[in-house]
Image (cartoon, rainbow, N blue to C red; front, side, top):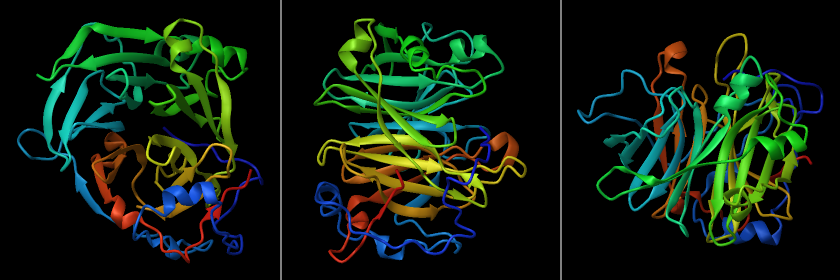
Length: 347
């Protein structure tokens, strides 16, 4: 998916002076303090080279332990030691171990016959269900209606989808009501579940002028009466006039906050200019944790599990020749020292 540039409201890293850092508010420190070595102290001033992210970067490999000839991993969820990955060119579900090796590839006959273009996936611990969202701005209302859907399902222990558990939840009407359901102008690319509060968060990659995240009670969605409200809107910044756009979400149940990935893609060169990782506690300002990391790759999904943060990359292999990848960051390697300042977003 290619991004459009936008106006002067964005932070232009190539021109703007270095921003003054400000310590996260106490609510944000609940998350930051439980990590133990995040190199946020090295967050980039504007206009400098990319930041090295902590942890290990690895290719996703098939059952033969060789890199995929073609895989565009666009979202990831963690459960029981496995990473459940969606591909925005296939309707199959890919299950990996935490080293990035494929364990199984599963499909359901009840999934859409045409490409759903799944963009993210989240796991609801309370119900034991996965929720996968498809979205594409498309070329007309039919494309948007067909590909912007939310599918809920369970996976059995033997690696098969429980066919009786599959249902499609409504997303169209609440976005229509908000005036956001527009071809070529709306694209969903983030999904997270707060299992305790039974709240679904939906992130929009487009429109690109602001980072927007909406939320809805899951019981409303499941009852066929969806109600969406804007949870967060902020300026995620830009680099070389290319905006950072929402591309992945994950809810941290231990700290009651949301981790947000924003990524970039240059329209004219098809280059990925860097990614940002944010942390947000509802009612507070988002805090920038990692700035312009993994230049040349596009972060598209986040998952938390077993003391690790998993970042999945969809590098548009058909266009770039670069396969999908996984970064595994121990949360112990993400912990902040007490003197570290986080950078709040512009609201």
